[in-house]
Image (cartoon, rainbow, N blue to C red; front, side):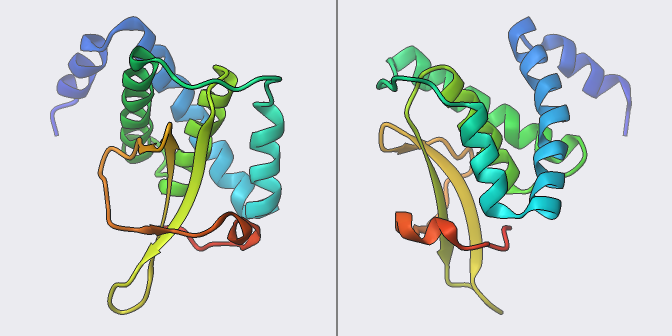
Length: 152
């Protein structure tokens, strides 16, 4: 792989995206480590506590576009940095959107696959998935968030 190409792509990003991408390269491994050490419930509680805002609001069309861009950057950082699966990616995206005062919904889901079920985590904003690679996973109900999913 030519090391100049990723660097050229990095510099081609807008400055705001470079800053967000750098943040994601740090945040995703931290959330992944927290999931391993503290588990799903405590990590989600930490994410929600760190992103608590007094009021939530619907996103504007520009904010929805920015949220989709942020989800794409999180997916890219999850592939390019210290590998992070969909669960830490969704948790960090959820945190960032809540800190902006938005009302994202953190989703866990499953789809039938061979040899067993395929788990997935994603974030929805105003009822629309921000997942850069949409899938046909069926979301669990809110009560199932207390489970400790093995993410994919």
